[in-house]
Image 1 (cartoon, rainbow, N blue to C red):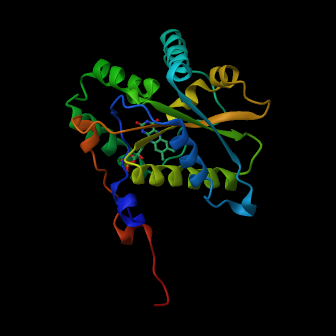
Image 2: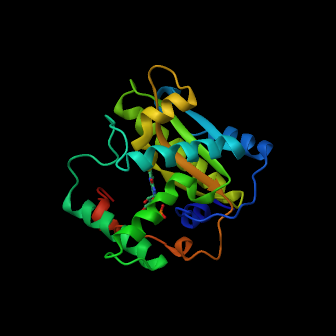
Length: 223
Ligand SMILES: Cc1cc2nc3c(=O)[nH]c(=O)nc-3n(C[C@H](O)[C@H](O)[C@H](O)COP(=O)(O)O)c2cc1C
């Protein structure tokens, strides 16, 4: 698969087949993705990959914590910043409506949407879960570099016939995850990634999100 095809094909996959992923394949995939660039070659990320009982343990812990505290735990790194522009807000709303539209859960069915959203905390039934771990002392540049690593993972997954969904939603359980995963004093989970073979039957995987037109995000000067 060429890079352009992988970029076009990658979507956030939110339903997976139970097909397990082979440990050697997962190791090779992680090694390949480690070629992602980072300023000063700092490679400021760490990955914890969970399958089988280890993944289940995290999911069960999340279910227990969110049952008693559905809004999650406090974090200094909220998923969205206080300021989001109107344009960005509109995009966020549009993608939510498009997704729930695909699976037929109307806006009025708040409970239905919440139940569906909670599937995030089962990694959408993916057989493999990654946590991207960062040192919370890094600067803003390093967060961007970790993003390059994550997108490289996602593109290389396409080549293997795997789907992915990056999941910042795990950020509402940072203290719990830090303790459970045995992270270092300054480490934190930034993001989860669900990985596995996409379920071709589930309509949620038909969602192909819009993007801004070229004129909206790019200026070409001096041509
Ligand atoms: C860093 C990051 C975190 C995300 N977190 C979540 C999440 O917690 N749950 C979810 O369903 N989608 C999540 N997404 C998926 C975005 O909603 C999705 O990338 C966006 O709507 C564009 O759609 P696409 O990935 O299908 O192209 C995340 C994406 C990124 C890049």
